[in-house]
Amino acid sequence: MRTVGPAESGFGSASHLARRFVASLWPGGPKAADDAWARSLLIDREQLLWGRMSGPDRRHAVAVAQRVARHQAGIDGAALPAALLHDVGKVESGLGPLRRAAATVLALGVGRDRAARGRGRMARYLRHDIVGAQLLEAAGSRHLTVAWAREHHLPAHRWTVPAEVAEALKAADDD
Image 1 (cartoon, helix red, strand yellow):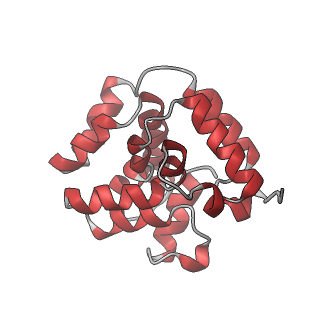
Image 2 (cartoon, one colour; image 1 turned 90 degrees about the vertical axis):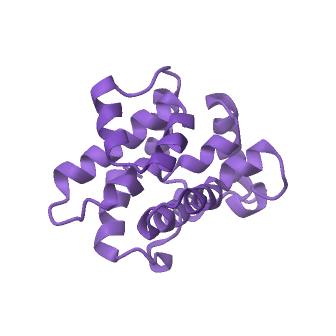
Image 3 (cartoon, one colour; image 1 turned 135 degrees about the horizontal axis):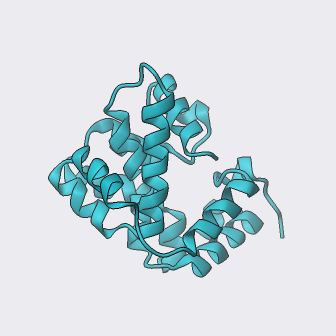
């Protein structure tokens, strides 16, 4: 079995993955004020997708968007829905934290593309970037939001999102 590193896998650093796993074990979504702030940034059909996201995924997304809002002077507010919804495709997998962790370990071991083949829930989870872009496109999201959902696991040379915005979003995601 060929083992791939975090950069090649598209999943980010081991510490990022460990923090996300531990955080995913704590139930519940963001604080009510944070949830209201997030919803205020989303169009109606995006709010429906937001409501389908797990509590831990919504907490993570709020933290990413707040980091973008706080630390990225000059970044257009249009980047905030992209920060909030970059992982929305995970809703289609129906996996909980343990099975998500198993899918990630499998992908790290054999490569994400190979592990994402098939039609099962783990494959859908590993393709959450593509699935999320499709959901957002169907919801009428802005091009930036759709593109970032699709591209957030790609290497920088494959981003179509303006470099300054993509770099701010990636940095805020703490990969």
